[in-house]
Image (cartoon, rainbow, N blue to C red; front, side, top):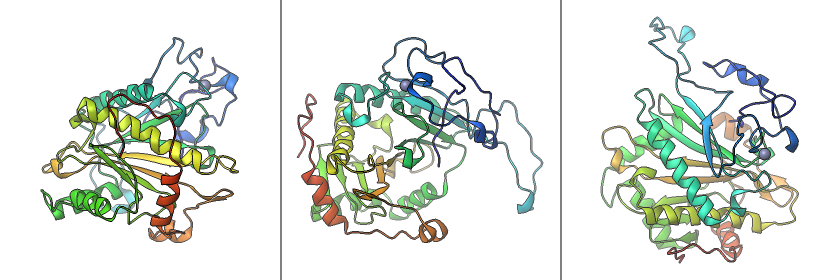
Length: 338
Ligand SMILES: [Zn+2]
């Protein structure tokens, strides 16, 4: 999935209109404008006032609010299936500092970002047409980022996307309690230990035994019932902010002089609707697209065409590298890493 943008044109006053109800018009959106023309800096037409974190609907949405019934004749013919692209696409600007990155932001600013994600997630999940809300970031131009200004996105789907559907079905198949899917994954990683990267009272970060990408890291909420940001306590949200900085900093520390800047996909997985949703577990996936200082990891034919991933190294070995790339001076009040 490629990155999104809000406004474009030749400068802060430039503005393009995009079709609001499908993704096809996104082909016209601008690409990597210069810093002077950045639409996310606070002097732009889009964001004229100073801000710390801001969220607004994307002007080049793949999905959008469609008023009324927008009736589409029902059909059983799969070659004629069509439906309006209902949903929402938001853009989240992390900071008004154009040249910063998540790993560079002070923990208290990342906590503000976590609170903004949580507030918007609540609003979006309350919409009747929304089934699943995905908070994500494409970091780095090789990851599809088309604006250098630090930002992420939120896609609100009217259905469960295929991979989420598979996770949901597995969650239901394992059932509740300590034998549930997520408690068993967390227990295995904690017991094995060799793939653990960092942990707090509320979260465990590890390169999972089922990693698909080199240096892939998942962050799981430990507590039963935390199926989204909404169930987290203030302390857990502080820990999450600190862990985000922790993991992002390790990637930056790994190869500081590398050809690429560790392009990485980051996705938040959470559910808030459906019977038994309390058995789901909030987790974040970091999916790096770099496998060595000068080589990228491509999702090539086999991965794209069959869904079968070929990992180029053992997660245990790469986890050791990430543990050794620990950040310094990561201070967050009341957050203790172990
Ligand atoms: Zn900017």
